[in-house]
Length: 432
Image (cartoon, rainbow, N blue to C red):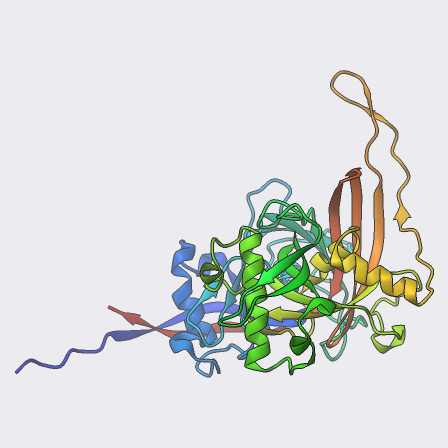
């Protein structure tokens, strides 16, 4: 008689970490040297630490909060890149699945990178500095983000302040997060299909295909921006938390992923839930005061738009920071569904559309042959975005290289962040 097969032994592991609330997200901040050298070996420790082992949707045996916005990890290390302070890798740990996603960035978590770097001594303020710019390289998207962080009398992060953001009770010091040259974070282009808006034919299970109008755009993160008015009537009226509605939204996202070149098929797109992300757009509410702007920049003439964003297949409680940057970029480019919805609403209400601030034209420089070159002018526009928890202002700087090509130079959004605890995370891993 054969002896029963012995179960694999489990070993208790530990990992130093900091738990931070960053913007409207919450997650672990970990020094890279506390994880295995190869990113391919991060999956086991991160799933176990967050409680997603065995596909637990409650994450009851870990520190995750059982939602996509509270199951995130930021991995930080000093950077060897010229002009960069720290490297930052974002990891989305799935809830209810044994999966980790490295495919995109999280702007909210990024708002905690500057404070973390300052608190951990990865960057240092000069004596007397009241703010410091922390230059961050996001390895997921190969893009630079600058966190402008307030500094206290000891040279550490000034955490307390009177700045507030929708979706977070209380206040903190303002952290300005600037996404530099955000276009083409994963696809290499602002508009991966070459179109500013297009009709997308969506197939869903055994139903007849339906068509929607959308903009496929990649700025800070790739997004499928859908004009809500073009959704089929049954999707406009059904409950947005029902499995039927969410599965239709996922079909739209997968169709967009294929068109953007992020997946070769819709079945392949189903394997990567983090990107592209999906957002449903509609005209703003008729009252500016219903969703007050945090910085009170929502004066007449600022374009406004309303959004329902999705995260890992479910409605987002507010809006991703990268989503704010991406959507605001779309609002500032004529021909997108976002631009049309934002400015048509302004026209219907008779509001005056202010001309965006334009920086003075620089003096003509010279090329290698001594011929004068006129540099493109830069425009700065504040875009206000309404979401389920309030509103967010985005400062977008763009320039026109020619009549057909718009360059998004930067997008800046303000957040708050707070260190919740520091210590050691304990978890178990199977040993073969």
